[in-house]
Every structure is written in C-alpha cells, then in structure tokens.
Length: 579
Image (tube, rainbow, N blue to C red; front, side, top):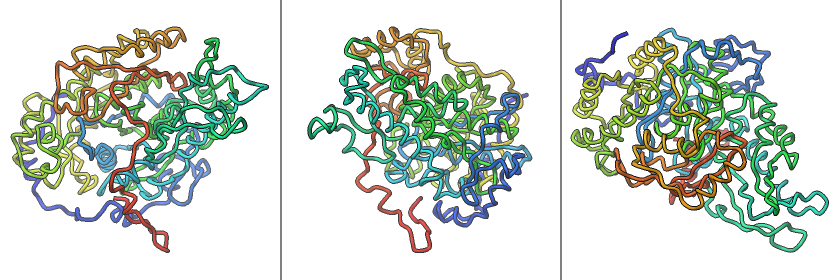
C-alpha cells in the first residue's frame, strides 16, 4: 500500500480547535469519574469465561496461563510503541498506547493494550502515578499505582529469600558451600526510593549475627527476578531460570548458582500468583493486561512475555510499549524479548513531542512552554535518529505527534512538513484530552501498516555472535557511537562470561535514558563519542548479560519535594494526589 499522509492544514486546524472534554481535571479526578464495567464484562470481550478468572474485587483479575494459545500468537498483530529521547517528564508512551488501543477498538478492531506495572518508587518519588493520563488511562488507577495484585511484593520476597539463603549458607557449618563472600554481587531489594540503603554493611554484632560483608539494596524493578518473570513461559521455565541465577564463586573458583542452594522451588512458590498477568480496563472499557515492570535503562524495560502472548491469544491486535526511547526499550524488546518469545511484531509507533524536540534543540526545561519553531527544527535530528533506529529492525515507523496544550500550529507544521518530506507516516495524537477520538487517524494508519506487514521484523544481531560484537553493533548502529572501549574490569568480565559458557546470551546494555550516548549531558543527536563499558554483570537466570555504560542508579533517591507529600486518603478511602 502507498504512504498515507495527513493534510497539514487539517493538522493545524485540529491542534487549535476547542476540545469536547475539559483538559483541566487531574488524572485521578478523571479516573474517578469513569464508568467501569465489572471485570467479568471485560473478560467477555476477550471470550474468557468468568469461571476462568481469579478476581480481585470487581475490577481486577488474574488470568490463567492456560488461556495462551501459541497457534494464535503470531497470527494476530503486535504493535510496539516507543519514543524519541525523552525529557525528564517523559513523552507519553503509555498514554499514547492506551489512546491508540481505545481508538482501534472504536474503529471496530478487537484490540488489547498490554503494559508494565508501576513501581512504588517513582509513584512516591517524582511521577505520582503511572497509568496513562487524561482520557487515556487504565483503571482502577489508584489500585494499579499502589499495591495492585501484589506482584511486586511477591518478586521482592522471592528475591530476598535468595539473599537470606546466601547469608545463611555463609554462616552454616554443616552445609557451607565454601562460597567466597567477596564474589557475591546479589543484593536485597525493596520497592521504594531509598538512597540510604544503596551501600550497607551487614552481619555486625558477633558470631551469631552472620558474616560481616558489604552489600546494599536495589529497587525491586531492578531485580533479576523481575527480569526473569517477564521472560518465562510457565512455572517449569520459571524454576529453571531461577535456578540459573549466578551467585558467585567458592574459594577454589567453582561457580555457584541458586540451584546449588536449592532455592528455586521455594522462590517459584512465592511467585505462584505473580506469574499470572492482570486484567483491567481503560477509561473506555478497552481490555488492558498489565504485568511486570523492569526498568529499560537497567533491564529489558517491557511487560512480560506471558502478558504479550496472552493478549495475542485473545485479541486481533495488541498494542504494547517499551520503556524510554528506541535505543533502550525498543532495542531490548526486539533483540531480547521478541527473539526469546519468537514474536513477530508488525508495526512500530514512535512517540514524539514538540516539547522534547525543543529540549533537544537547546531550550531549557523552564522554557519548553514558550513557542520556538527554530528549536523544533534543530531537535528534528533526534527524531531522525530514532526513525533510523527502527529501520534497522526493518520497520518504517509511524510517528505519533503527542499533543500538549503549549504546542503551536507553527511548531506542529515544522515536524509535519519534515515527516512528509522523508515519506514517514504520521498523525497528531490528542488522546490525553479526547481519548479515542483524539487518536482515530493514528489508529487507522497503525491498522493499515500492521495488516500490510507479515514478516517485516528482523533483529539487530544474532545470539551466536561474540559479546563484543553484539555490544558494538548496538552502540554503533543505535546509539551512533564511533567506537566502544572496555575497562580492565570489563575485560575480566568478558573472560568470566566466556569461561562460564554464557557468551552466546544476548546483551542488555545498561545506560542513561537521557541521551542516545552514555553521557546524559549530550542532547539531540551526538556523534563521534565513545561508549565506555566499565563492567559486565551476569544475569544468567534472565538469560542475558548486562554491560554497564556509565553510572547507572539501581536504587533511586527521593527528590527534595517527593510526590508522597501530595498523596492522602480520607475516611471514605478516597485517595488524592496521584496525578
């Protein structure tokens, strides 16, 4: 089919016309006004019998893994939503994904949106909520943002059980494996921002209190258990991957894994319910599956493989997202998740905002609301690189221009004229303010593109390549790096990985989300830079290795004014402050 464009005059007219719905309400107020259907009604839309649901009240349910039908997974259509390099506030991938799914349903195409679960750390830290926004949200919003169905708590407990077993074995006289505590990198986790726990010393107080050693806490979303849960197929696969977690070495250099501690069975038991994806709904009663939540700057950044396959088993189209920008979440979605799950994505949507383009064009965060078409033009270089990145996976992306109230017709014209000149499909997305009505044009383009693609997807690299070749391919092609340099520690890690027979695993590069490079201060489309790999961690359970580029924070801290200060609850149980 031919390239489809929107008339620029209609874009400008649409950008300035009055909205049918007010955009002044806060997200939580809009969510509270929603007319939610009982979760059994949402399940009916997907052909699920109510007896197959494990309900959590009226509006949430767990789905049994038996509903996954592998024969349907690659017959139905999978759409990935990614973005350009974001501003600190993000560019609205979740809102776009939800609005797009709602619009596709309005056009008569059975669609499910499949998303990640929010972490309490960002909810109480900066974001204040992570379930979409405006009239494109998943509900019940308060439940999803807080404890939901307890998945993150179960992941935390399973992770910390292994931590306890490690320290117990170090202390044990009867069953001691001879583990050298100096080689143990496994920390503890909690789902909260807590900088004071990043580096700690445990085991103080005498012989009965454990072996003194340095360790620390990571946030739960950074746990390898989270990464594992999001890549398994079933309970047996879960136990195998948990058993494969690398712990460290004995004093005589023998590698020790979680299976040597006989930890995998109990850990899997704690994850019995967490492995099942969660069914909820959008404000317009579109089915939504939410499951798992690894960060994209330190892990694979996508919802679970089980959730994605569940959606593809139950609906004709699935809209899903990957964290941060194309060189992070999308790369890991394609190269790790899609390859492990044998998924064949059919379309890629690239979210861009005028605000982000101005930011990359040199405008400060405080001035992003001020009109500046020239800065938008400069920032197009960042958009262009992300379009190029998706072409490396054999996709011609659809650009969703995610609308903000501060956008001007002149600024919108800059990006629209440019996309037309390079023959890239695009649409203005106003799903935040108008729900499905604001994403109908985008939805039609996505449906046409996905239906036209059967075998378009190709990964960036093969697992059989060397670790160095995989790293350099990602760094040069997707980041735009000139070369890659390895520290002495990273070189030692490469040898360790080879000695353990793990060199054929994919790479999950950990780097800043603030730049295409590994330097967060380099905006727009940097060039001529060198990516520095300072160490390479082993995530044998998850099935990948983690090259660390730059300083990566696995346990965030709270800001000076955390979002928790604005969150409250009244005597009737109504929560406020989740923006």
